[in-house]
Length: 525
Image: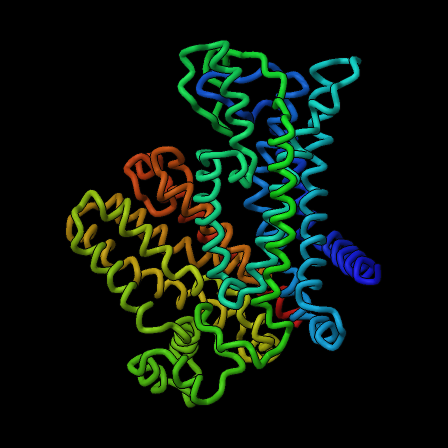
């Protein structure tokens, strides 16, 4: 009983602290908007060119599909900071002196994560009630048909995502930006795998249950149904979608037991994180390399973490005796590259060489997107490195932090962008592809400005990593489907629409946003 009481108070205190943060309010606003979009018919679920009648079962299934398909991604990044926050605030050092075990501590964090995600999913449950009331008038809604998909499908999924967030924080190399990128691509793979799992017991998301149940109803009404299942923002086709009757999932004891088992598996996954958790013991940590940070390293480790010798000797000519802009720029560039191992530079050369020598039709659609994903963790430190390293008071009290240090940080990020994309840029230049080269230049200017603005205002690296990876995935890797998000001109369609000019303007606006964010940082430092 004592352990249960400790877990309750740990989860409750963490949940209350999270709900007072601006990030939670922004997440609430986003969920409210999604609920509105669903009610307005802007965001909907379709099976090829069909959809279900707007009864309680379909509305509940639609809301559950949104929770599984959208909140499972963004919710992970929202709650993946519980352990990190305790480490930053010093609470972790206090917890380390208590008899609370690592598995019990992580279990409490899992309960807190689950409470936050459940609160957001509960808002969509209320939105489902509003939507059903609009459709059914004064008739009493079938609450079981309306909310059972959220309870039996979405809730275990949120529990699993909450456990993954705890596990990623417990494993040292998954705590930072690398873990954020790993989850994004792993999430897409796991979600597709869940749809085609050989048995519903292996479907962690519950989407396969919805897919098979809705698909069977669609095929019964329309034998030509081909198996589509898509959450979409697209405009409704002319004439609308043809409808069919779906009365909900036929919940057999086996299906219900499978969802309960996934709830237990989520709790076990959170507890298993205790095998990797250092329990805030600094002696068990290794120097950070992936993020370009080497704080806490010994002199020998610092030498291993240093940038290449040619860069050190180059920048040493301008410091410390020279304090001009060139010196500050080289210092910022050196900080960005610090900690990268030889294999990072080898891969960078591969992306540059591929952009220069690959077939022309592959340069913009394959090699350039990969080249401009590789420095993700370097860009994500822009604008927030000073706050994370606790050097903000020193940096912002130096001469000209706005006129010198901020432009130098941007130029360092731009230098990395140009170098990594240099092979593709040179190929476009030599080929005389001027519109595509203009798109390349606009993308090169846009990326570091986005990183600097988001880092300056959020004070952390996570926001840029999430926004950029999502933007990169939806835009340059799918330029035909969403040319508006193709910020590097991977396809002719986005160039023809004038998107390079749009992103050039956005780059300038984001620099202004970064300037305001840095001014705010200098006032509060």
